Length: 319
Image 1: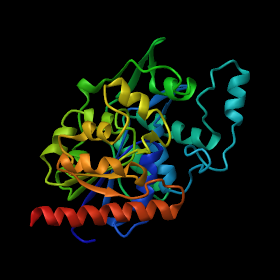
Image 2 (image 1 turned 90 degrees about the vertical axis):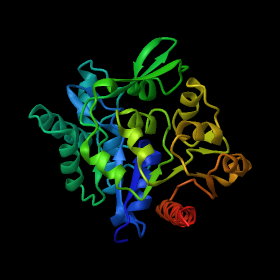
Image 3 (image 1 turned 120 degrees about the vertical axis):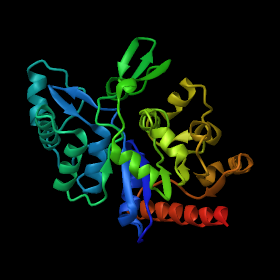
């Protein structure tokens, strides 16, 4: 794929699945990923980057496939001992996973950038597709509930997304600086694929980093989003609550509204095909296809189809 440049914006399990699909597709060598860092938080004095680690573990075939996050063949002796010592252990961190967090935290204290740490961890796990960060600064998603403000991990893991969502903010976003690598990658992209990730707290957090969304809007890239909804429902996670909290409908229209200033195309599941006509009325190219990714073959087939559809329609628009 000489000369082709593809960017995947990815967060959460849906983002990791899309990344795996591209990594096993004919377009792997043309792909770079920009991941979400706003889920990051500190536990037991260690800095944890859940979305970035899920990308690394998935692409390195180290992910626990059963739960979709964490390391496979994991043990939890450290957590068990911490619990015996009276520590909060609702954030499940396995022993192998803790090695990642110890390594990251040590390098962070030495002044090594988050981008460089990510690169080193990716290399350790044999990941060949570059993972870029939107910023090296600390940005953290916070969720306002009737009980008050929670960190995203408190809302997602501890509370199991049970609380109503009243508001969402990205703490530290005003002072965050975009990485040059992310800005250059977006500017030079032929295709930008938005993974079937939560549009508010995964993709939205990436786009909220100053200058990132503007770079996408200015880019000559063909931008295509894979909807995270199937039959108007989320596959996993609280995207429905998040959409509702910002006044978006829980359907293809709500997903479109999140990306309307820069989107050329959307991929929706067969169960949502009734939305295709409306989306086309907004000027979008629409691919209707099965989007549930259960197997490695599903991931590769979907992302290959997405790239081929995007390249074909980009060519048509240029004609």
